[in-house]
Image 1 (cartoon, helix red, strand yellow):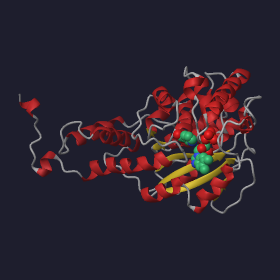
Image 2: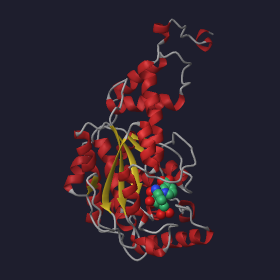
Image 3: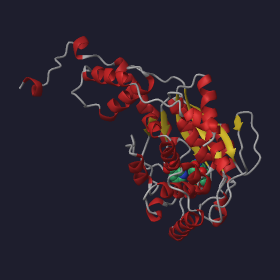
Image 4: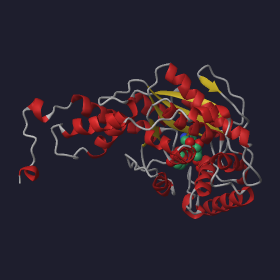
Length: 356
Ligand SMILES: Cc1cc2ncn([C@H]3O[C@H](COP(=O)(O)O)[C@@H](O)[C@H]3O)c2cc1C
Ligand SMILES: O=C(O)c1cccnc1
């Protein structure tokens, strides 16, 4: 791996164990039966471990939408044409996409990065970090070079670094790239024992015959490229995507900078699996927002070893589920900072189980 990427990964630290213990103790004193706030408690404890604070808050949060195109689209694996990628970028920049609406509701900024769209784009609010004009067709050969894959991770890390300098404290992964459920399926099959049949789903809504074809395309891409399961960069280069690599960088970059990162749907989770393969400690910084309706996402999350917070039958990506999860992250933060303790509220904290 390149020096620049390696040096940054070396800065990832384990969670603050003292803060985790302090958070557990604080939560045990709140006026609810022990453990009764479920995932809100585990989130609050994780956030304490990440930030070192028992009462964290995240006023400044950003969805990073990594956008890239996929050469494999020529195989006819999506229900939509490649032109939709740049068209949706204009929609994000105009504030009209689903993720924009949900981000406004949750008080998050949306940042869009062109890391590999197959057309020229220019807009004052677009971050232009193009590495190449889309990937090559992975059904015929590697999607990109090893160096380009490393570069995509570095771009994601640098986008996070710049945002942290502006005061951003929490990141949400988002993506846009027609064809990227195909690349994500190939990535997870290359990294795990999940079968192609189980990993490949309908993406934007393909019919049964196209689904069978998509399975064949992923099988072919894995066969001709033979990605090395022990080398996540090789997997990303051969069967991944530029926006997937960018998200690996966003996830690792969040961990490097001590920030929580909310993982959105199927594509973001494939990036998370790559990030964990590169640096297992990065998983401590991840919050998996939701279980997507996309076939294979549940198995992917099992592989990642993380439980989703929500289940809303979303199957869109963009960062939509990630932003919705933000409301629950805020809820967890408010619980630990605003709730009364047994002592302050004069409520008896001893359970009958304890007094028996
Ligand atoms: C209008 C539109 C908006 C989207 N927003 C996210 N995606 C999602 O769909 C794409 C992946 O599905 P597939 O692999 O089947 O092409 C990605 O761009 C993903 O972000 C969209 C797709 C469309 C058509
Ligand atoms: O879960 C996702 O992220 C997803 C599912 C289908 C299409 N695009 C994204």
